[in-house]
Amino acid sequence: MKILGIETSCDETAAAIVEDGYKLISNVVATSMLEHAKYGGIVPEIAARSHIESIIPVIDDCMKQAGLDFKNLDGIAVTYGAGLGGSLLVGVETAKTLAISKNLPLYAINHVEGHVYANFLTDTDIDNLVMAKQQPEFPMLALIVSGGHSQIAYFRDHFDYTLLGQTSDDAVGEAFDKVAKLLGLPYPGGPNIEIAAKDGDPNKYILPKARLSGKYDFSFSGLKTAVLRLAQAEVGKSYDFPSFELSGLLSERQKADISASFLKTSIETLVDKVVMAESEFSPKTVVIAGGVAANSELRKQLSARLHTKLQYPDFKLCTDNGAMIAALGCFKAIHKQETSDPYNLQINPNLSM
Image (cartoon, rainbow, N blue to C red; front, side, top):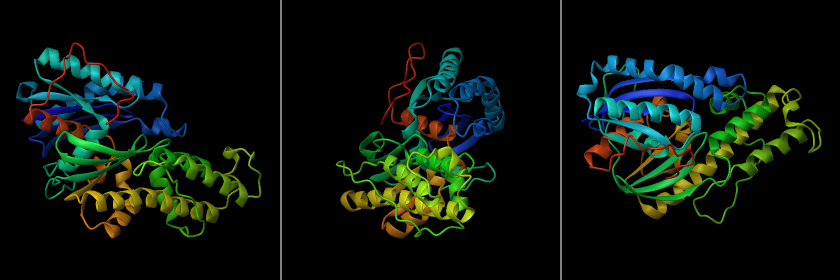
């Protein structure tokens, strides 16, 4: 069972081929991140144009890397939501065209679910990828954290899950980006806050954790505002002082301490919920997925506090990629899930789990 996965939900144009849901045959990613870094965040129009330029070369490279022709494939999987509308259109329309012209089944993939399935990849001949020794066992608890998503889900089996909680405002990755911008750190925020935090004191400032009525829900807007107020106070400015002028007044020590304190609190907010869910549901495996799954502090705190086996993908498979989409497509094919009509499939930018 060989499935081509296509991913274009944000700024990465990606394609991969996965065999039987566990073996990664080929994996190609083109990113426009450097273009977006100039503006401190994703610019949808730039992302869409980049996908248009990159999608065919990326798929061609993917097929060449695998040494396969379309006649060797058993289907095509494509992200149809959630994501940026213009970006999703490029991937979906390309996948629909290929499915029709090559007479292949088409599987519509939820981007957030796809991140979870990066954890099911256990074998590859591709250099510089560290794969898990075995696939996660069910029941499974999944923490999906990225620039657009912060969710906890309980999986009883493939395609049988319950969404336990999610963010009510900013996703944790988005909060990282906004705090980094406030501190004058480069985009993307997550890795750059981690770098700055290495020289800081995580206990220097006490920052708040949101208390919500939803047991497993998150909120990061209050934490983000608390960092803004802290930075204003540290430089002796009032609440109406513009946030974009703060970085020039903060010392490197202050930036490091704020980064470390924010990192500690934001990660604890996530880990607290996972530990609580572990106690309630007693899963056999806990997986983390999404771009923030690459965060070393998140991995460290979870490893220290969980009693259940923790699993996460290689750093290169945490951010958006075609491998996770192809892996989920394989399981859809293996479990005889419904295919999509390539003449009628539409994007869904606001798709949820």
